[in-house]
Length: 384
Image (tube, rainbow, N blue to C red; front, side, top):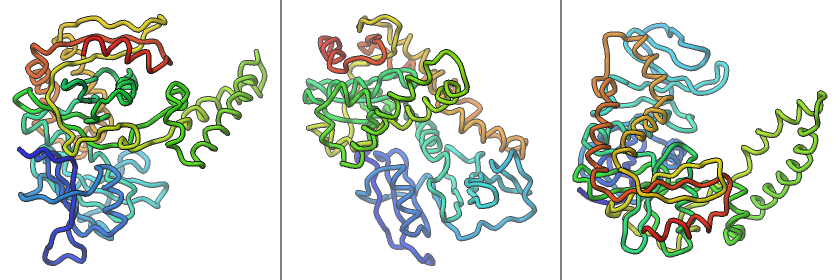
């Protein structure tokens, strides 16, 4: 198995106006775009990462772009501008009102070789990452919602529930010589010895930047101005929202979460890590299970890796909820077209998690929220 990161490059093809574009996830899953114009290719590239190579094998997932997706019968809608189906196809609708694009996904084929048909103009191919992950799972590769880095010659897997502290742990080690592997999805090989990552942008929240001011100069002038403006706006909104009663207070209480949700920037990992290996891969040596708690201390305790495995089954199921919602719509449209892999995913993941984390040195890390990120390094580095 090769160990290159997500890569893509044009290849020659017949009977297409545009050259195909290939993506390769560490030799695990191959994706090919057919008839993609520059905007289509850019949209997928934003989802999958840098363009660096080409497939030397048949793709697992083919995405064919068309101007108008042909249908064999009238559309029957599921929800309002969410999904539709014809006599033989299931379509996801992306857009507003009637200005939507149609994307045809054969859910009964996901996990094996499948072809997605996508009308031009989609900002992204819907559900692409879950489809890639299920394709990897069918090959015995475990996609885990996690971060990973290499520190002191040790490969460290950081996992837990969404927003539990995976990115914060990665940031805590970034300025101490750690090598970046991944920050969203990590792929563990069947031999349980290695893990691979994807070079995705790292989301830094405003409180991250206050805790790690050395990253502030990495922001563009417009990003710094936007964050400063949001800080000023929120200081006024918070005062009004904390008023005991009245319509202005209720209005500001609704505005608060909207403003706070914009207090972040996305930075490429190259700007945060001194060391970026060409191959985003390392050994799987230690596991950190991170979460927040109500007390102010950061605690690090050994934990049975099987406890982590049992919990992460349900974290992975939660991450797949949006995909499963569309799969249920597909089954409603075509009750006689089940996907055997999807029907068994929970059990497959449980088996793989138990086997792949067995005998790994594992620690449970609890921290307050928010917290000083350098303090997390001080607490955790002692066990790595």
